[in-house]
Structure formats: C-alpha cells, structure tokens
Amino acid sequence: MAQSSQLPGFYNYSIDDRLSTLSAIAGLAEEERAIVNGAAGLTIHLADHMIENVVGLHSLPLAIATNFLINGRDVLVPMVIEEPSVVAGASFAAKLARAGGGFLTSSTPPEMIGQIQVVDVPNLESARFDLLSRKEQLLELADETDPVIVGLGGGARDVEVRTIEQSTSGPMLVVHLIFDTRDAMGANVVNTAAEALAPLIEEITGGRVLLRILSNLADRRLARAKCVIPADALTFESDGRTFEGGQVVNRIVEAGALAAADPYRAATHNKGIMNGVDAVVLATGNDWRAIEAGAHAYAARHGQYTSLSQWGKTPEGDLAGTLEMPMAVGVVGGAIRAHPLPKVTLKILGVDTARDLAEIIVAVGLAQNLAALRALATEGIQRGHMSLHARQVAMAAGASGDEIEKVAARLVEEREILE
Ligand code: MEV
Image (cartoon, rainbow, N blue to C red; front, top):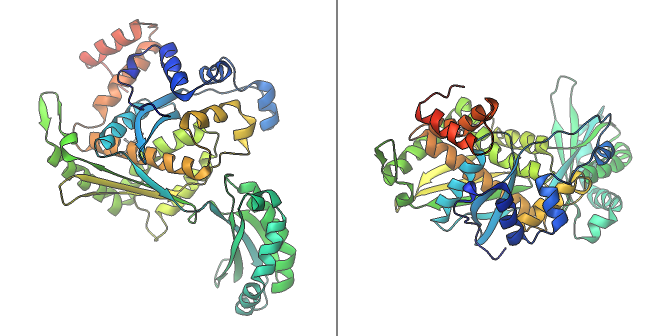
C-alpha cells in the first residue's frame, strides 16, 4: 500500500465512502468489496462444509483501524470485534506511535511444537539418550509426512526430550518435535507428524505413546513489536484539564508496573492487548482460541502470571513500549481457505507470509494496550467508552440513520448513559 494509512475523518465517512476509500487503497475488486460489506461472503452452504450440524451464520462488525505504520510501511488493519472503543483506540494509539516513527517488529521462524507423551517407560534417562541418538531418523520420518511444507523450506527442525519425574500418574517422557510450519498455522501439519513418530518412539523407548498433539504454548514462534511515543505527543486536554506529556509517560509506566507485579491487574492488562490481537486474528480467519491459550501460558511462563507488554521511559523522557508473545497464525489452510473473507483481509493488510501477519497482530496488540493505559492512567476509561456506548443505546431505543449520532451526543452531554 503506497498510500498513507492516515485517513483523517474516516470515522465520519458514510459506510459506502469508507469502503470505496479502502477499495481504492487496497485495490479491491467488485467481488472483494461485496465480501467485505457482507453482500457476498460466507454462505450457509460453505459453512456446512466448515463445521458440523450447521443451522445458520453468525455475524460481527468488521472495521478498519487507521494510522498504522509498521516497519515504515503503512497498513490498514481489518478488525472483527463486537466491543465499542477498540477500533477507535487502536487507531488513536497508532497515531501516537506514528509520531515516534511507528511500530518496529520482528519474529522468530514459524516453529511449532508437537508433543508426544510416553508412559510406562522402563528407564527414563536411558530412553532420553536413545531418542536423542536417533534424532536424525525421527526428523526424517517427520519430514516425510509433509513434502509440500519441506519443499517450501519448512519441516522438522529438532527433537527435544523432557523427563517428567513426578506426575499424578507417575514418571513419563515428553518428546517435543520442533517443526517449521512456514505459512500455515500448523496444527494439522504438526499433529500428523507427531502421530507418525509414535511407533518409532515406542520402539526406541520401550514405553507406550499416549498423546500426540501440538502445544499451544508456541514459545518458539514469537512475534515482537516496539514503539516509542514522544512525550509531547501525549499531552492532551480533557474536561478543561491539561495532562502534560511527561506526566502521562510517568503514569503509563506506573500503570504498566502494576500489571507486571500483580496477576489480577495483569489479566485485565493482557485482556486489553487481546482486544486488538483477537480482532485481527478473527478478521484473518485464524484460531483465536489457540492464540489466547498461547498468550496466557506465555504470560505465566516464569511461574507467576504477568503482563505480556512492558512500558518504560527512554533517557529522553519519551514512552517506550514492547510486546512479545507467541503468535501461531497462518495465511494458508483451514478457515483461511474455506471462508471468503480472510483472502480479502490479507490483501488489505498486504501480507503474504505468516510472519508478516504475526508481526502486524502484535503491533496492534501493543497499540491497543497503549490506548487502554493512556485512558486508564489519565481521564479514565469510561469517558470514551460511554460516547460509543451511547450510540448502541440510541440504536436500541429506535434511533436510525443520522438520529443515532444526534441522540448519542445528547445522551453523553446529559450524562444519561448507564451500563
Ligand atoms: C476492556 O475491554 C479492556 C481494558 O480493561 C484493558 C485494560 O484495563 O488495560 C480497558
């Protein structure tokens, strides 16, 4: 996308104008526009091939977050979410981050872990040695299960053996097959490979293989984002009160410190990150339960649940944020193939690889976290929430078209909005 993702006033455009602008920037064809606005898209017949016992379809709003600059590239971000304020928050925070050069991201190779549980092993230590000495054979066998991925440069990378000396069912071994799944999320690839290794693992260990399944704690498949927000960009006024940038930096750092130290706050802090993450994961047809499971397990990896992001102050007094988390998303296979929307959202994002998508998602998570912390640490979250909530109340009360904005504005003015 050559054009900037800054679209001032996008919020005030009509839906048609938003879609026309988006289509012009992302080069969407007529059929793709129809998929985005819901005129075409998932049919009940397609759905019937996706899951079992289908009786209907379920919809959620699809919106575009603006202002994202990621590794110097402008990105318009499709987000699927039912919660007001999230898209506005992401766009606002992306604008703040832009003032400091946008988001810088990186990621590890897309390596997933397949777990093979081995019980009734006569001698754990000796089995571990024997497995490791046959590593090449195990890797070759795993590679044979997916020549396509191997042809694309992926495939089995390593075998690790973990001994669990004590469990409620006694000692056991867990073999980890590390597999580069390239642009696929990889659950099917890894599960197939893990199942294929089971007989050889039984033969080598003299034990009995039980589970053969991917781990959602995808800590070898991490994506990272960072941003620096100039303190000046954080100065703002609310209700006649001025929040000075340096003060906002300090407050956000203090808010981040609570999340780092306290699991009760960390859960909510991370929930805010997942507001952004899940919305893009959903918009791109990926498995948000896998991402949620991986995120929270990663947040607890040191034994205490903590925040996924960190906020600090640079020597210049600016705000610096980082986020690192597992991001097992794909751009091929699964629902991405079956559902018409993901192909279009991936086109809007301008991504071809799973790693590029993972990095954008983490940048959105960091933006979302920034938006929440800035509000929480200054004017409070309810002010912004309530004006958006007011629109839903207005619609529920029967307002339509232009009336919605008018009624909502009036409700906010008169502080009539209650949850
Ligand atoms: C609400 O969906 C998300 C927040 O609670 C996140 C946070 O507290 O950081 C606002």
